[in-house]
Length: 157
Image (cartoon, rainbow, N blue to C red; front, side):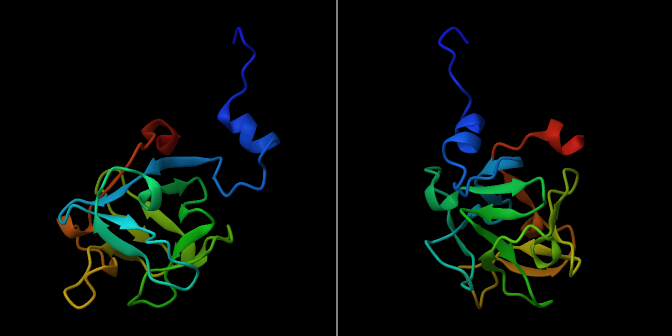
């Protein structure tokens, strides 16, 4: 205050508005599967490619995702998107309209539910070990996710 410094939000809004960093989010950090201990990872992939899942490294980078107030799971300008009931979970440019990019995170069950299909994000299957799967919500530990730096106060309001 004494130095009249501005916040990071001010910087993003006024100096770097073209940044893909979301301004309004519930969590920003890794998204870790409770059973496998693996984390979502962009793997540097692009639109239309599958979301990756690898060992959590705690170094940020490709493992930084935000769960936004629009209920998107995003990294850079890409959002987790599911267009068919059986998946796969892919990256598509965030459009802010919900639909295939609308996810509901439950504080009680730790599940990430795809609203359109009413299916839950799950650990990888044995046939596709490096990408998360999606399937009927069962409440099993393989469908439980720990979101990094989550703000429960914002989520409850």
